[in-house]
Length: 75
Image (cartoon, rainbow, N blue to C red; front, side):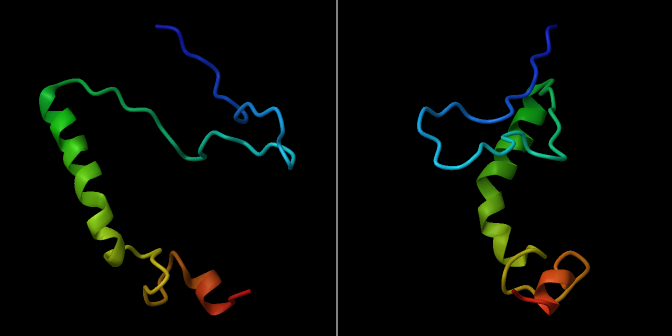
């Protein structure tokens, strides 16, 4: 199996600013090996937006270990 190098930035003929990295940090690929895994991923994608209000990085979330820096020191 060939592995392709990640794209460093999207192609653009008239980019107004220097290109930033396009690949997500801490992103990993996952090979879906069977129907059960595929269905679990589909459910996650379908249900994930409904969970945003409960996310620790939501703007209205109380201060926690994930948002304490920017919640306590807003710019």
